[in-house]
Amino acid sequence: MSNWREARHIDRLVKRAIRGDVDAFGSIFDHYADRVYAFVRARTSSPQDAEDITGTVFLKAFEAVSDYRQQGFGFGAWLFRIAHNTIIDHYRKAGRLPEPVEDIEFYPIQDPILLDELIVAKVDAEMVKALILNLTHDQAAVIVARFFWDMDVRTTARSLGRTEGSVKALQHRAMKRLADMIEELAEDEI
Amino acid sequence: MKYRERYPALSAKVRLAAEEMPLDVRERLRHRIVTRLDRAGVRPVAYRRVAVVQLAAMILAAMTLLGGTAYAVSRSQPGDFLYPVKESVVGIGRILPSAERLPDEPTQRKVAPEPDPKPMEREEESGASEKPDESKDPANVPGKPASEEAEGASDKPRGYGEDYYDEAAPTEDHDEPASGQYRDGDEEIEEKSEIERREPSGSNRGHRNGYPED
Image 1 (cartoon, each protein chain N blue to C red):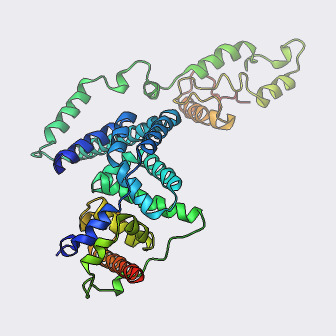
Image 2: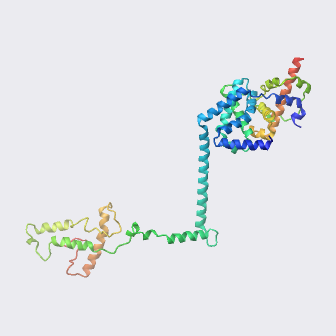
Image 3: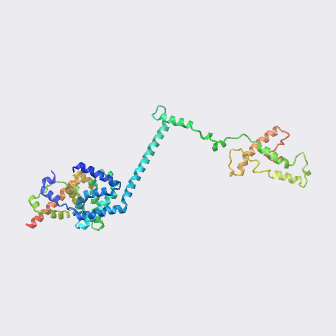
């Protein structure tokens, strides 16, 4: 399904959900469940927690779906923001706050990521997933939005309430950190 | 250049790191969410809120528009776009029966009546039979001393609070203090007695303030 068709389809489902159509919201769940789960799973080590948080995200979304129109960006970005906030709430309630966010404004993008692609090829996806858990929450959110949800920089910035520059900086630092960790792992293996 | 183009291997690995939801988890979660939404009645709450907000916004917008139009109509001058509306409203007002023409309207009773001679007449009717005639000797009335009769007459007039009350007076408020009630009547009587003093007649013996003169 092309992007605009998908957007129209989602729009129709959202309208029905606003009128209280639970089945339409079920279709929305089918469409976004994997992405939300992937985001939550990238930030939680327990599958059970991920399942609970994903459920909470969709319940919150349904309760607030009538406010969606006022946000001014796509439903996916709006849902992503709810997921982002729900994960933060989860950590707060558990008494374990996410790692403090680095002030990215002081880290301009200068150096390219120096990483041997051959080394990366040796690392499997499971390991990368484990490494993403070591990123800060905002870095992980940007990585998930850009690579799991295929969101552009502008939409990511709007859904996270940041500027486009800060999103680019966060992405750069996240990738650099991932590359560093992969290199360390590769050196250890050697 | 995008990261996925510059570092395809890393980007691909990151993309592959996205964990898919297991099918059983998906089914379980979907069932749980749909059941909970149906049971909790979240739907009507959300829908009602939207409906109430929309209705309130519509009413507010309609009131604002109507109020603004009415204000503009009332302020319109000849030649203005809304002036014909103002004229037609005034015309309708003329056609419709005005409030003063209605028979049961209280404004009709506010029309000032002509001076009513009732108090004096009544006084004469009721008082003349009981009052001692000046031509007769009070001592001739059996069983009543003349002094007592005179005292009673000067003490309190007959029909005090009733006879001298002008029924045709503009006010019908009976709760008004007695002093206020009789002030108008007294003034009228004073005027009358003055006229009578100037033009004395046989039938009217010149009462002052409604009381028989001694």
